[in-house]
Length: 43
Image (cartoon, rainbow, N blue to C red; front, side, top):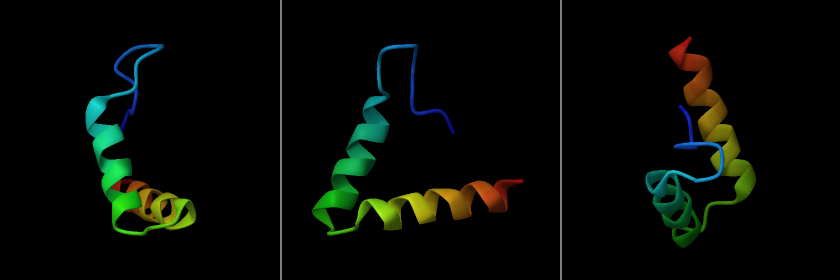
């Protein structure tokens, strides 16, 4: 899971996902917890 297309440009899909999470009222902590859980399951 890489949120950067290159050294200086964020992937637009990541931006869309984060904005959607914000729209749904999710906190930064909730998003981080979800991403960490998904990362742990992928191992």
